Image (tube, rainbow, N blue to C red; front, side):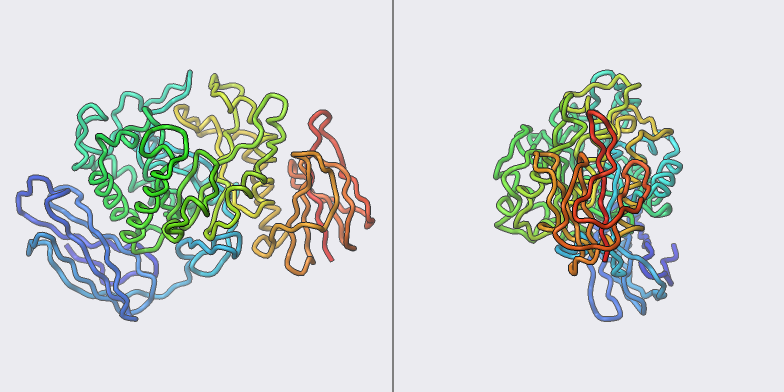
Length: 525
């Protein structure tokens, strides 16, 4: 089969080799890997993967224009799986891969240098929809049009479903390995039909221009088998699983994050509590992913328990993890869920001193009243909670990922949008069209305002304080400590921007009754 002779910069090239040897288990009995040498002499080691019918594939995305060479070798030696060659890479303007840039541009830039405000949605079982033949392209295209640029997605379909949410995959037809579930698993084999569904999903995301958080393992005992069954899913099978995933998908531009585990503290006991063992696991696995992932994608972890601080958890090897996908929900009760109070304080406690990047990656799932889906802690996460939680996270200096009940576990109802989708779009509009997002940083001392917990103002400012934005979670009055000639109020419900007169004491436009409206005060010199 002809190998690529020419590729555009940062395109995915695929090299194919075949063997007629009758391997008993081609997933484990032989490895066909490649090294690629670039114009500057840098060498990239790329693992290959078995794709059925005596075929091994290597996927690589070159990041430099010019002449490249490659060598494919098999271990143990198999002459049919050995090959050398050359190819040309043509230059072109590309955004490139997402990179972690701590303390710069809100923690992330593309290879092109362009800053990005990450706004994400959660669709854990996106692969199941593709596998079952459901067309998810309209949903992804709609999310891109609405300003989203990231989707949280699990690489193993999650069977967990809350009360009254029945999934069409509950019969366990969807299983990425050989065998069946935790009854008789064969972790040394992979279901190629499943992975072709993953291929289609990852390629589709690249085509529509949205990034993916690739969650390698789900830390949900009894529901995301086998990741909390370490008597079955041993470290050896874990390494084989991750190597196969990285080999198959690391070359794609749509891969933004390799997240080791959702709520990683479930390792190894399957209990929702922090343990130093889980931290050691994360550092070890983070290093393994970094060593295997030659394209340099961001390695991240997602937390369940919020303490201790991450600078303390990973102090033995802080470079093993690039980013924290931070989970904290704020208030979620019947009387205070609308306010989403406490998010900024939790972020500060957990991430002070952390040398890497971070996102507010989960703060509840917006409930859908027409769905009989009741999970403790979710019931009162309405559009008010969605909106305020997002603004609290953003005004703490972090990108935001949220989720919605109609597409969260089980329902798979992707045809409609809940109200919070528009609210998040208004946040994106403010930070990407109205103010210079990448130049803003959390600031203090520029305004005096309400002091009640959950209602205190949050402030972003440019370094020269020429642009200042103040978020008032429940409105109210603020007093300016500096003079500004251009003053306006931004409505996070409508995205309307209304001019205000210059004065030292300013009162928000109000509204909301028992749930006072939140407002953004925009100050410019």
